Length: 445
Image (cartoon, rainbow, N blue to C red; front, side, top):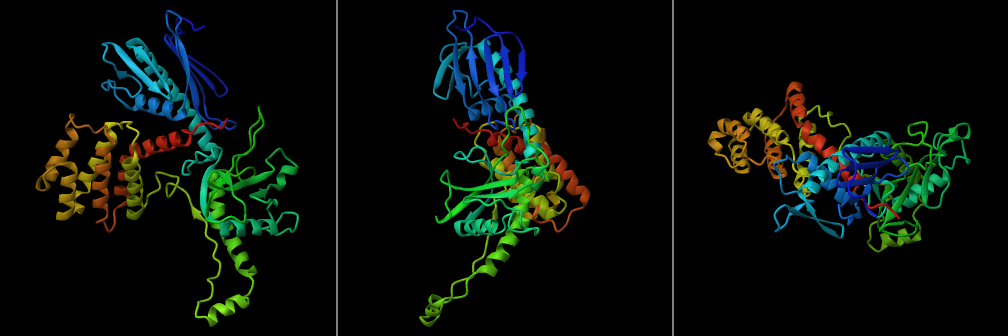
């Protein structure tokens, strides 16, 4: 039986279980943590006639609603989670197969609940991200526990496993004999686990295709998945160079160190040309190309640190990644006005870098006259009627800035630092979006 009402402004948390209550509404959520790296909850509405309702709400829906509520101003009356119905004072909530009618009080209570849920999610997600350092790497819907660090061919994966099994830690004492033999996983053994409670392995990588672990003799390309450390209830793993490697560390080692080891070994162990190769030459066919091991990084961003641009080319690359992100953003979640106006201020600052062609391009994107940009852009920034909360404006502003920066042979470090500072609101929003994407998957049953 449902209560007639809940407590007011109630926030209760035990470990990763968060309970929120606001008179007519209650939300119970699982916050992401090391043992359960997922997000989702159960939403309950109390009614005076005891006809309340509870239903599960997916991470994707809950995060979209919560992020929208935090970023939208209160002038936005058309909420994605409460559509105005034909009956005055009534709203329709529709999500995940559930549809019910809310009154104005319930909508306002849900607003408060979503704001508090966002605060709890953001704190928990940031804490886990600082520990695992996964921000630049995506998750897959069919492999929800780990993060994709690289893409390889099946031939490369076979060579990687062959190298690892040949260099099992029990077979030698060189710097490369660090692996724990496995038929389908790449495991790096942690010798310090014999004397401490550290993880038995520094790293466990698996290759997946179409949601299944790949066998060595299959074909086509594979995604390499960083597997999180196994944690017993009540315990926490030691993540770091001496324990289990985080995602960034694992990716760096894989691309910068292991790729070279395995490639050199594969070339040295290749069998000399057989009679088949001799027949290919006599029949006019070129000899087969020697095997080359390739590990392609799957990082979404070129670097983890958003404050890192130090050259014009790095600044352009930074802006290009921001622009690409907002171009693809179809969530409907608004941005803060200053996020867009900051970029427009940079367009004005670097306007002198543009020629006639760039000025016409900018005028077209911003719907201004090309011969009056110097005076029109400040007026545009000051125009409060413009919907700078829409990502389309931010996308166009970033395109204009990139167009100008491409003409810059060099910029002073002061100019680059100034640009990075003004781009931080956009970069922080990208960070939030990436965290939402990482936890917008349905947890495995």
